[in-house]
Image (cartoon, rainbow, N blue to C red):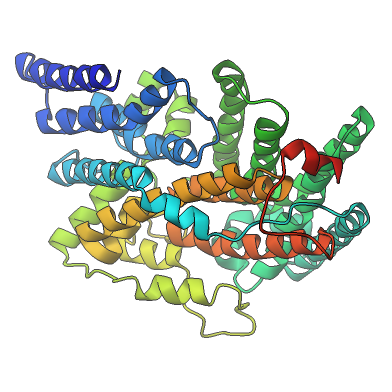
Length: 471
């Protein structure tokens, strides 16, 4: 079966090249590279479906879905329409960006299939097997109180909720610097009670209360405006449902995830409304008339191919030096230290990246540009960074997936849900995602240890049904 899939992919690639040559299609190299990128991107999905082993929330699939949105879908639209979000030419730098995306994708697949992932998965510590009911109730109450207090204090610091909503983009782009501990507590910590309640629910009444707490816990995240904070509890609930109650079929997944992804994209647009002109974004009316204004804005939210083209052009023409990972390492090492306590703390990567590559495209400031996983790896370590970094991400994704499957209890699934949302946003901005989710993992592990019985065997995992009977 794999041979036929590979043969079909090769024929399709040859067909793209021949069609481009026969009809004198502009950007022959671009179309050929994009066709090959598309085939390689689709291959893991086709292979899993053909072998009947497709798992919707396998970290490989979570990563590849957003990778495709960033580097495959929008790139194809640009080649078909000739219009770009940032009003840049489709030239050799754009082609180089497609090639970078292809190399990174191949490295990711190689890393995911590496036997080294199995070794890493066996080295990961086992999660708590059981939850103590009384401790779990206490954790729900404590996390709720801490989250509410943090949100109240955050709104006081910024001058009230009305003042925050009137100038939310300014606060999000830098006005909350030094207040990340309040943001984290008001969003992530406040979402933990709903997930714990949903995981322990046995009756419709339990589910109803969990739903109420879930919606209430999302309100601060929506007001603050960080999509990661909104996506986390949604991912948690969906992952739990998928692995504990009933696996999602392709049809159900489509019905569930299309609205979720649409909501996240529309929310991002609504969050930025009124600020697009200030950011200097030139959205062509010609393009909008072809694909529709709403669809254009929705799809252009993920424009990794253009980001890579801009990076390549700046490195080549302006001699922008490689960062070699030092600043990112310092940022991740000091992420848990509030800037109020450490005023000389290194500047966030989004500001450094925006100032380096987008200062002429966004005159007002450039803190809101995500470098993408390929862009950040290239900026730091050039081509070896793309291959090595994506290989490591592939190993990481497979190791965590094997770890979850080996233990498959509520603690493992809850941690896996956090890592699923982390892997999703890793495609957009690796350092930012790590800065955001590393504290989340630490907090969650502490909570899970505190709600587990004092005496519990940590070196083996019973069947999920047995585990649930203890909760």
